[in-house]
Length: 549
Image 1 (cartoon, rainbow, N blue to C red):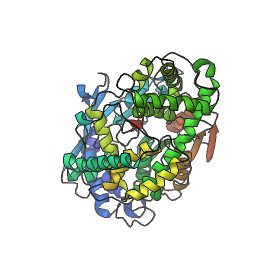
Image 2: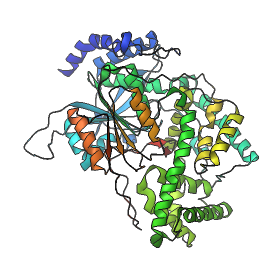
Image 3: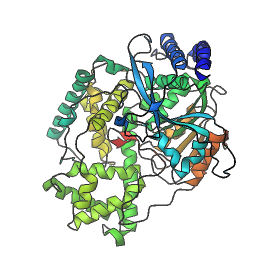
């Protein structure tokens, strides 16, 4: 029955794909970059119609996915280049768990199925294949009752035509340095590394690498929608997933049923991506201060200082000792910094990181080595970094002169030293990117064109500063912003805040939304404890080439 219906609607899908945006598929505003040109919209429509007819044949997940036997997996075919939909095609891997239909409040009542909820955890470079597992968590059971939970690996990620820029075996395992104020000679070394990495992306992945973009991620999402048999898309994107979700809303507004943006990227064209990274580095300084203030309040537990300044002194003392003598021969300043960067993303890490720092300064390096030592080089981590780099470099213009990077970040590091230079080294390959870049699409929808959407944001989020959520709401007509006051955890939907989850559940289950803005009290601060904390509950990690974003 389903296959017959899909085949019968393939022609109408071809037509509705052109109706996805005002004026026959063009965005509401001028498009000087040609990013929504008729051939690209037509290519998306052709691919979506083809996918609707084929559907997805779900079966047992491959062992390489690491997913349990209960989940079902399949693939969907998308064009490498949407301007040539009949040319080379690639396959995206997809996972799904069926809606349970179980009413958590009344076992005798069966919850009606509402379709598929597609999720992306961010990155670029993160896979959402594990998302269906969230249905077993208490915070997600009501949603899992009504929706098939669908995750997927975006183009370039894992089994979806994976990209590579470097032999994983050549990755630095540590220990390594990470100077807060790098010397001219150190900068020269890192410039050479960035140039070599950019060349490696082209050498290992070829010219096809130019098609790994946020706009193509949005187009792929529409093909996935069609393959799932959904007339309209219900989607939840976190972190970077909010950006190409916003692109989707701009390109295909009539295809949106419901859409959740959790921890929103600032979508303003001038922010993509250089300026957003500067803003992120600045915001991390504030979140780093939050962690130090919390640690100081619990000096009786950790003994790292009674003020944020004293805690910083303890951290810098450890940093200096590790520079002279790496812990276990594995943990140097760079590994220390990367471990403590995670405190800026998730306050779940605060107790454990503070405990490790305390133990190290008291002569026990084992907890720090456990938490900070870089794992063995893996193809997965290298792949995530390659996709992150390719997408961000392809999406927009970046400064191509080192003096611009040096000037901007030298000034920024004077007031925000914690992440600034590490963020530079991570993104610097974009200065030397070997293929043409795009111009960012102007994310914007006209009143009444897009269904109401929900934006979730923590007020002190460092990875995606709060101003980005405000800007996204300004650009998406009819959207509603729910703020977690005074909190900074990255990715708040499905977490421990029942107020946030109430808005999320109500929206996804009924379509109901508050007025233009609503606020929730912050979650409770973590308790200081020596015990190993559980993994962050209810939300997905957002990978930024090995970090979250």
